[in-house]
Image (tube, rainbow, N blue to C red; front, side, top):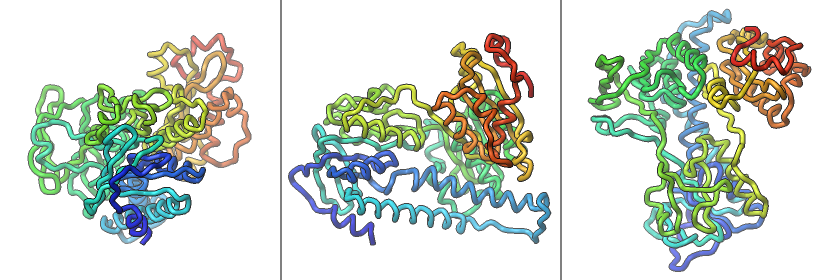
Length: 492
């Protein structure tokens, strides 16, 4: 009902531009929060999106995928029930009900978002928008009518989409992307995953836990290649222990068949051709910016050589009064960064000087256990020539992890050998993202690691594991010994 009400107020054709303080082309998380904020400050605001209320995060990406991943974790608890002294007579997985739980969550989020739009007085317009002049956007509505909106400022937030590489036979195989994978109503008999990054690894583990056979194919030498070697090996061990076939350093030569029925992927591994056969194919090999058809040239907005909107450190485009935020602006591809982009633009439009330069970019891979990182890892520190002390302990040193039988993984921190400030933190273990957040706050406050080491943290909690972590280097270690400790943990 709310959707119909909003749509009906946004469907009248207008031959002349309607003036707004802000027009948002694309309704992602950053632009949605921006729209609500500016509208609550008394600005006249309109948000244009082709389909999704709130963008991809609450509809087809972050939140739906974590919903599905949690259902898969519940399935893993059933399989491990004997470990906890619980017996049962077997269980089955109904993927249509797994999907419905996800859909119910999405519906609830959509209703909440629409309610917020109405509460603050921002206008949501479902339609396809494109620039027809500087700061002027023409919107084609579902009924064929058009509107022209002119903004004092226009903010582009159209995001990215899954890339489909030009591999012979791949497009014809009609592979799944993350969008279709989240809508599966049946468990794939054998899922082939092309891609060894965030999406590929998360879906591989989830589908395996639902009962699929799963094979992951990556062209790099390890999973999550941007991470340290110990992280990649820990992830590989995790997947293989759960029965997932992992094929790395492979070149995909061709694809045949059709996903959902029967599909084959021919790869070259160490000079030898190998054929992988499965029932479904999921492609998770990167993202492409959504800039086609936006009429950016009519507005004077330039693109980078990679196809993203060119912005400066204040997120201004090359056209006066036009800004870009989120993934389409080349920002790191995380929802929380899109939210920070909104803060940057909001501050700048309100007369402050806010830049993206040097900001922290925390992130998490939501496997079970999780992988979370903030700041430098070892590889990056070595490339930069940054001296550091290495602290590392296994998760089994965390007493809370022992109580819940989740001792897989490790905590690792890099500390400046002179100032003792934390340079970076990596956690592969249960609750990794929450533990990381505590370290990040210390990094923001520029606290020495000893403040975490000597803190009184509640027992038994996962965050309490920071105490043994930051006690794993002798207390009397002098700053001038940092170079000797470079890349070597004092105690494991």
